[in-house]
Image (tube, rainbow, N blue to C red; front, side):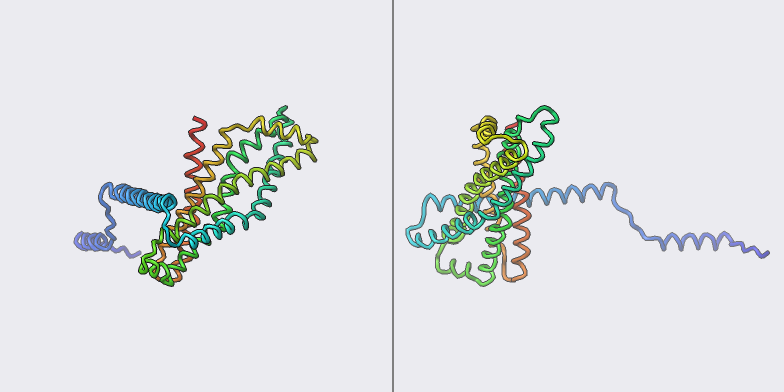
Length: 294
């Protein structure tokens, strides 16, 4: 057999060559954590700036409501009515179907499980807690986001691309007064009415199942719901409806006007408006709901 033996000199040179060939991927000690902290800080500052911009937009719209301009009131009123019709009236069919199915599902589950636990009389409380307090306002907000919120973002985005917004500003027409304010007010009012409508239809859907499956009379079912329903529940539903409507309208108007000059920005900003609306509605829901149980 033939054995090859490297001399110390060659061995040293080979080791040095291999050492030089290795990639030097040395990070400073603690560099990764510093980058993470910096990223979190940037995102936090951007989030606060985003919320401040939304608050400014909504506040200016409310100021315009309290001090409307003398000129152009007819056009502003027409935009407001169109927004209410599109967001509220046109959404009644899909809202009715979803609310009816939700009430049927919840009472079906409750009517199947509660009697086994000896709590069959709590059907009204289940309806109040799950639908009127939580799911009713939240699902209504999601319906409005999918139908009207995306439509507002797309409409304002196209107006920005075609320079209609710039033309209005050049003519001295305030954008907040004639473009933003009627859409925000129309969506807030529509959201409030749709929320209560959703709750009523969901309760009716629950009664259909209670009457067919649990053989509960109409009077007994209504008494169970009204006994569990309190003024706090109604007030919370109203606050959530107003809060969700304000959040969705402000977000969608903001992202629609954020479009600069390209049509490709319109679907991008519309998607961001939809996602941010969902997140902001959940945030408002937490802020309103959690203090009630503390």
